[in-house]
Length: 382
Image 1 (cartoon, rainbow, N blue to C red):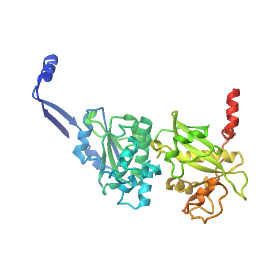
Image 2: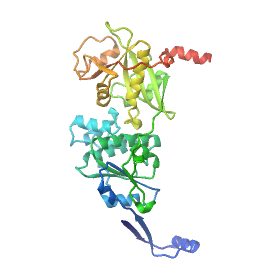
Image 3: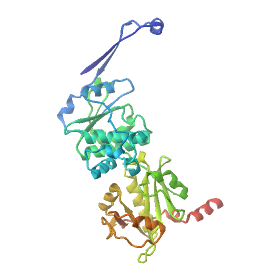
């Protein structure tokens, strides 16, 4: 198939200058021919296709031939999650989490106050979830407005959702780096082989490994993450803070507090696990939580967690590394708070995911467990 784009030229002194300087012969109209052939896509089952090429190659024109590219119409007066009102509230929260938009405070903001990356994910969630059976979701300029590491995170999150729910999506992009994260079933470029569809197992290889680095950091590091957590933003200098970075960028934090208990000795609780919105959907929160549990277990400490976040809670429910406590999934009765921090939990009567880490221990990271004051003094000496 070919798309012919023609446009009449309104001549003036500027166009006349171009004609004279560069010896342009056609002075009446501009013409562009775009070739593509996606007919083979009808002969096999697929979930994700990519139309790729440089700017101006005709990607958007191809998508327009296939359907509607209109943007989602978000109500500026409503919270983001309220715009998904054809779903039940729990379904809407699970949808946003599945698309890598897991920051609860973000769900409560209107669309126009979100970051570029958050807006893009929200658009994806809206279009994908609102698509009718057998309808192909069309996304133009895929990840063009975001940082490239953020683009990888988005790509991996959306492809997981698309495949899990057996939907179909075609994206247009000039960025080749998203391919190994989207793992498409086919690709097509109007600049290559007359726009023929290309297939191959090489397209469906697993995504690249993510190398995280863990750092013991000062409590002030919490300031970068606090607005993205669903509980109170207050922290404590007595807690231990573990920062996780990817490609030298901060992506997440785990905050650990002592667990006051008359029955448990040497016990600790993961009181906060926050992944920045741009990097949600990659499973970083689960990996970071497991890592902290493993190094605490190696030190002979018991490590517990409590959350109401469905994505992280359901992950632990299904993991052999975590064991649900007797309170898992239950609404706990009020009891006397053992600390000011603990009183926050007791004031909230809601079902929570409660677990103890029972997975393998991990040695070699003993320095991360040292008191922060001792680590400061060690750096001064060195």
